[in-house]
Image 1 (spheres, helix red, strand yellow):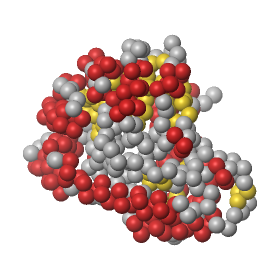
Image 2 (cartoon, one colour):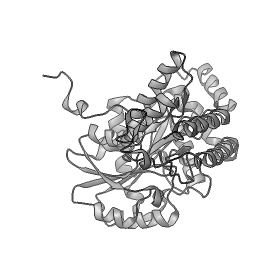
Image 3 (cartoon, helix red, strand yellow):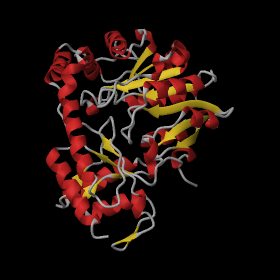
Image 4 (tube, one colour):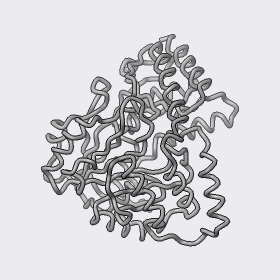
Length: 396
């Protein structure tokens, strides 16, 4: 009999970390690997945010914070949501967590009973399905493709809803596809969900600022679903604060209280120094982050031009985030240099071993015909990675 619980045995390891760890092991062995696996900005945290952390240490912010975060930080988040997203949330409706990942698990823990269904548009971030499993729910997938920019329609959504549906969980801008939903598309989705008051929308908006061809809109801005929506965001992507582990949820009052209750029994308040620094970050004008967005935009265009020349890749131009998610169906079912390619995970491993480029297969994103590349890397690394893959795959 296994000592590990059945619930944990149902979970998979994050394929993102599996591939990044393999790349690290190869590098440690002296192999020249270019890793494009992790969704982590390669910029340093802006100096004024770091200074705020130093100040917090010197001011002895070393004790427990309130479970949902310092009041001043929740006020700063409230102000940010109004300034950038035209959303009205009181500080009491906000719960600050140890990263946006915890914010999502808080919401799921608060609303999902065993057997409840959570709709996941595919592709989805690797942890979504595993989180649903962890809280006892069942994921129901809506498939998309590169031809539809990996986005669902309101009609697809309505056909998927059943009496067991409890939540819709998605990201826009999207990890891994780099797509984002337009105002019109979101409004159509909101109109569907508004017919089902028992359904909660969990809207992951962590990439909101990394957006090149349109303005991010939150689905919570549609009044018909405001009371049904949990907005998820955090400091990791826009502010390059991945290791600081500050995320937050903004929810209707009943759900905000439930998230506070969950977090109070799981972790209590998030890191106090990182919370204080986050106040300074949120008070920055978003234009101060433009240099990072401009650089990602430049890299996107470079990679797109180079990736078009790689045999067997079908690629669209992502409009946000910092990922490419090409369709590599051409290679599935083939034998490459003695490696049978059954799905994109096999193909990602083939690229690591033969081109010395690390990416993430799309199986754990719900799209076994695609692979994900992060372009949060230097221009030199990106150019070399594209060259290696072009040379490697050109043989077949």
